[in-house]
Length: 529
Image 1 (cartoon, rainbow, N blue to C red):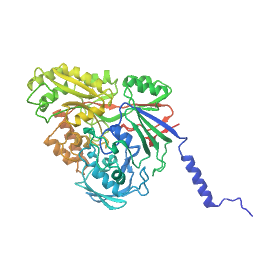
Image 2: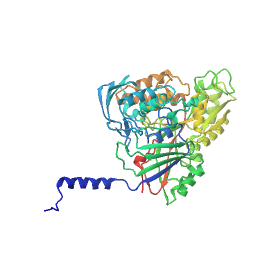
Image 3: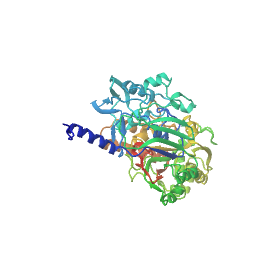
Image 4: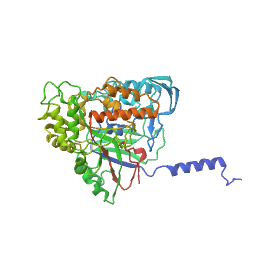
């Protein structure tokens, strides 16, 4: 006799299968994401450039990652244990495969550490304070630290793991030397462990990705294809969104925000970005390249730097260029970053008379001429900001000759130390000010210290504070060091902060995603309805 009863074990299996089906994202979808600038390379250890990292993090992963609330969670490592304050053991995730099908093991972590540390790259900050990565067995590594590292787990999120065997096979053992315009296999091809496989990159046109069906993690996303479209022209980008050719736009022209907000076919997500826009001055050279002053460097004089800063009307830039979408800056880290406090972050009020007086005291009553390098496709209204500041500096006698270029060329120029004065934006991937201070303001040595210090800045007080905060486990003591360092940059005008960016995103009404203040949209947090 056949029973119509379902055995409990099979019932449980059937319910699990049904639950799995119900939890699957809806039908497969293609997300088309546009912004104004292209990536610089596909090499994950070459360039510390947010757009490059934001795209590559879909394919390359770290041992840790952020969840939706910027809390650190396991990724290619499943757990970590402090053997001692300077020895952290990571247990690696087993069964993970690279996109070419090869297994992920400890050898890949050890190899990737050696690769990211090579001096021609600019990402050493993400492994700051790690002396060695030691293989214990195939799925265990120990990080040997030079001293305790308070923000280690946040830093290594952007330490991306590359396959050792793939790199060996394709002669990609060395990090691409981007500033020297080197091309390489790893700069054009990708083999990660992440949720998406990058299938093609047509520079300045399109990056194509497909979902990795063998990804180790479950996804709530239904994005099976992802396209990144760099569209430099503001008008063309907006037209693509309005016509339905683009689903998500993360570089909104400020003049179009109100119009896009009113469109019922679209929705806007607004939020500040943890990025500060500022000017960098060469303070190390004995003479400024291309300047009218010969035999000395005006930027070595604090009064000149302060004059240039106080000449800038940050409120006017916010009002007329940014349409209110900026936070005028007094310090080098934005709200949302550990170290930013309202009492410190007070922007200078524009005062042309004071600026002229400072220049005269420094011995430049007539001012001087200097080249100004500026990107024209990277930050919100970057070239327009430079044009406005050129006019403000002209009023105090400083004639800045503007050289505006796409970021790919701009970046190569300043990395070769060929820009005596240039605009840069700095986002804080770790949400901690040490990331900014150690990268930009610490004297350049090897590794992470000063790895983005293209100002040739060398300040003994700054070095002492940065070196102390790197290893200070006491939170209140460490925050006091951060505060002192940020205050010193402000009081000595070591950089000229303009504003912290506000970054609204616009999208088709059927896009569900999470706004990211690090300006890195993630397809795994996105669905199309």
